[in-house]
Length: 317
Image (cartoon, rainbow, N blue to C red):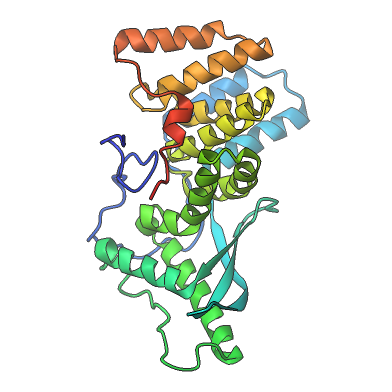
C-alpha cells in the first residue's frame, strides 16, 4: 500500500519543498548556476576538517577543495532535441523527438538520451498549468497545427521550439523541482524498468535503470531521498542475479540518500537487506543490525514489507 506521507503519483516523493510555492510568480528565473546556501557552519566545518588533515599533500588539498566545490555547486542541465523521426502505426502517425540532457560545467559522461512524442509535451504543459499557471505564463508552448505537422520544415521548427520550451521550464526553480517536470523526463523509463523487475527480467531492468539513474540523480539533487526506490530496485535486481557486491554498492547509495530518516518506509527494509548482504560478503553486518534494532526500539512497528515487496509496488500506474 502507498504510504500516505508520499505523493500518490511519486514513489519516494516526500511532498512539496517549501521553496516551491504554486501561485507565487517568481520575479525572474536564475540566469546562471545557483550555489547551494552553505551557511557559516558548513564553511566552518570545512576549515576545521581541513586543519585536522593539515598533513595533506598539495595534490590531496586540490582534490579536497574540488570535492567541496562540487558539493556547493548547483547542477545545471542543458536540453537538446538531437533528432526526430516519423512513426506510422495502423491508426496513427506521429513524430518522436530525441531529447539529450547534459550537465554543464564539465564533461558529462552520463548524458541522458530519451524519446518523447509531441503529445507527451502536451500532457506536461496541461499538468504544469494546473499548478504553476502564473509561473509559466511567459513560457510559450509550441502549438499544434492542423496540417503540415510532418513536413521537414515544421519538424525542424518544432525541434527548436521544444528545446526552448524545456530550457525555459528548467530555468524556473519550482518547476524544475516539481514532480510533473521530473516525471516527464524519467517516469516512462522507470515504469518500464519496474515492470521488468516485477516480471523477473532483472538484466533488462538494470539496463534501463543504469541509463535513467544519472538523470534522476541530477534532477533530484535538491531532495536525494526521491532516488531511494530506484536504487533499491537496483539492489534487488543485482541480488537476485547473485551479484551481492553490486547490490551492496547500490544499497550504500540508497542509505546515503536516506541518511537518518528512520520513519521512511524504505529505511528498515533496506537496513535488513544490507545486513544480509554484508554477512554474505564478509563485511560488518553487526553495525547494520544494531541500527535496525535501535530504530525498531525507538519506534516499534509490526512486520512490514521486505525490500522486494516494496519495490514491486512502485510505478504500477
